[in-house]
Image (cartoon, rainbow, N blue to C red; front, side):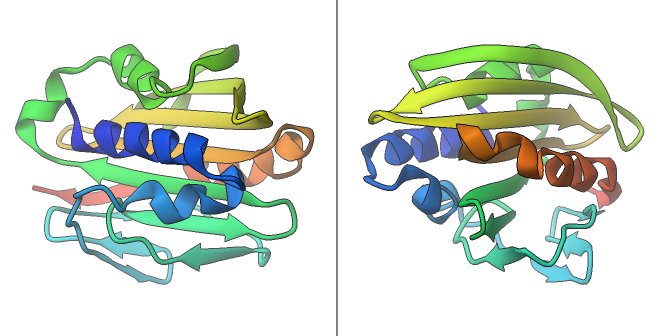
Length: 185
């Protein structure tokens, strides 16, 4: 199973055990055994395996530190997070977009798929999914997107309280629309 998928599953499990799930989501995002490191310089993120440009986020979004995964951003005005992770290992490339998308929400039992559609990402299509979900009696909105370039898999997520979901959904979609893979090994 793809490491980013495993990280996301463990995040969701950690998410379900926390008392304030949304604020702790990004903090747990990369803390499960993923030892990647990278550098964000302006809107370009670079690791030893790949580099890519991210789309813009408004001033309310702040980058937060995570030990694994690639990037996470937090918006305190509505307690929301946006994350992105990449995996460029060859053995992970065999999974379909649908399988990758479903695996991102495996740890969430109480979820309702509201929408699933293909959207343009960089040079191809990615699979976008939007959910209403409930963990520990907290209802929240979650959107995910999986994308496969020629050499890497990418997954994006956006989560917030369900009543605030649409407030920053445009920020998430802008973040995705500005994504461009620059290089990958």
